[in-house]
Image 1 (spheres, one colour):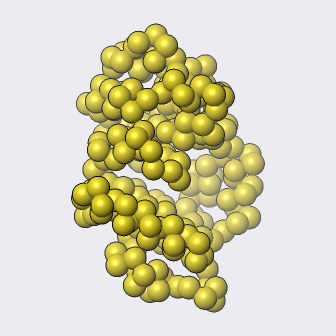
Image 2: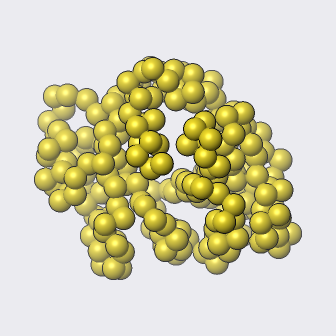
Length: 212
């Protein structure tokens, strides 16, 4: 999205063990904690705590230590989103695989929820459980887009089985490319930028174009 000229903010909301900055080889001087400690819930205050990637992507990093995550509550998260929303065309929030008051606060602010699943029975079970939980709290199911990640043939479950089990069509399918992804991860390089012609990059670029 950022490379296509859209002003985009990525918020690392995996507050205890966030690794967005690490995977992008960023070294943020400030994190979400600095906003809270300084009570800077204004657009200018939040912008001062944002780290920029070379492609133009802006990142609000998670706390540097797990213990610091306790200082961030659901009200803080909503205040940050509300304050910064007018400045961006897209705000992407990377969430942990948990549902607490903090995650529910984020869900209240979302236009779309990308729910990532893989072709494993444990993933299918957890994804179904989450969908039921979201239905129980009256979350708008039409906002949910299923992302099938690490797609590969002949593993006992396929895309059709996943769709039948969840009752929701797959929005996008991301193929398995473990070598490219692993090398990119360890180098702190985005494979979408470094290897845009690869199949996995093209599928992710397609998702961005759908959003645009």
